[in-house]
Length: 380
Image 1 (cartoon, rainbow, N blue to C red):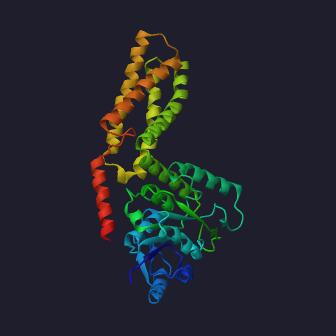
Image 2 (tube, one colour; image 1 turned 30 degrees about the vertical axis):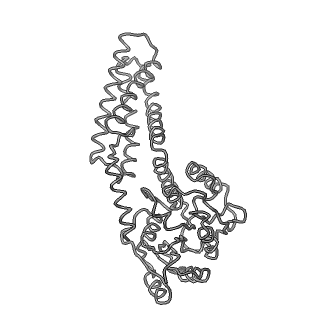
């Protein structure tokens, strides 16, 4: 009998809950299914528990000995190995109600949509216990930040969802991060008319909450990637302006102090611009560290310093030229000299490096890489 539904359960250190979760899944759906457990190399009894369950149920365990990309990576690993027409994702900690799986599948089977979320925030949905004002605010802000590509979805951060296999197979450039894999798939699969099914989100009985400062930072980095994907030009320009603004703010106070102490009209802008480059280097360091797999250049720091020397020279030369030909006050000199340097930065990074953030990108190489990844997923 062909498999209709693949239930993917990412797990880490949840062996004591797996049997209950899988029993619940099997009790709720009578369709031909498979259960794929993806474990991130737990040190508990997960392999033993899964071996016992596999003797009675259509269950397969895949252990990621070198896990990467967190829970999102585990989910995509399971999806790449799934055989079902419909893919369902749920956690192993019993916070997601397995009895809602038929409701997740129903709109997909009727062809009404290509993606269904189990939502805490639609009428009929709820969370166990009371959340603090801070946690409610955090959830609201996270949802608002995702609105440009999640539309009017109320709970795009949900980890309980279902989609058609063909929807997953049309995904473009999957770059998961953290545990917001539904948001990644909704964006990269170009989903439309996402449905939400109300669920009750239970209290975590084992393990620690995913809502940590580290995970929140990863969420912001993930959003940055999704903005790049959806708005490649606008996102790059916005980030460029943020970096420029931070550099100017870092340098302005020092520049005014130098000018107040009688530093020359040429030396003042030149010395202060060093702080702008230092601020830019901080952003560059973080970008190279977190996005290294997407940086085509083997020497991104060489490129960065080459452009920095050029823009620093533009700042110094423009300050010299202005000081010999016009009478300006210190703020005007700052704006003119730094403006010339910023123009040089933009032209060099966009024209020569083909990216306003200063990282060379070979678009054709990236396209070939993503096509190869798609072929591997289909072959699996």
